[in-house]
Image (cartoon, rainbow, N blue to C red; front, side, top):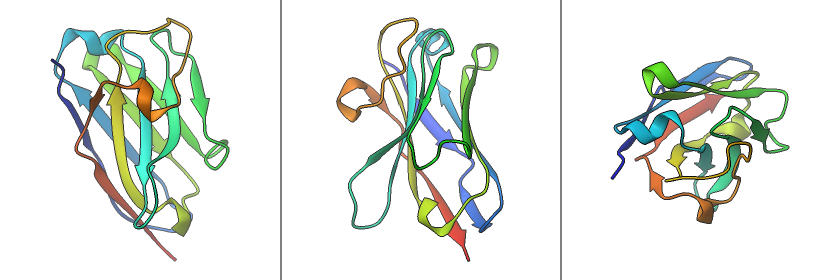
Amino acid sequence: QVQVVESGGGLVQAGGSLRLSCVASGRTFSSAPMGWFRQAPGKQREYVAAISSGGSTNYADSVKGRFNISRDNAKNTVYLQMNSLNVEDTAVYYCAARRSGSYYYAYARISEYDYWGQGTQVTVSS
């Protein structure tokens, strides 16, 4: 089993930046497809960004051009760099991992992931 833990959330002013980190416990992290999702109060969890085993990336339209997902296999860590944040980005952000997957495909659906972190709160103030 794999443990997934997010960190880096906090309070930031609109227009600012924040970087989230996601650390997995097992060796599978180095090759596992990973994704970021978020859930705002009263809303369903939604897709944010994903990265494949081979490093291919994909983004939701709402964050494209502002957010960047990357991975550092040596540190067993996936990052979500968030820039030009606005109030609508306020949510609990979750990191997810798959047991296996395509080397090139970045999975974008909740049902495609097997392991989830506890979430980290991101609050953007105006």
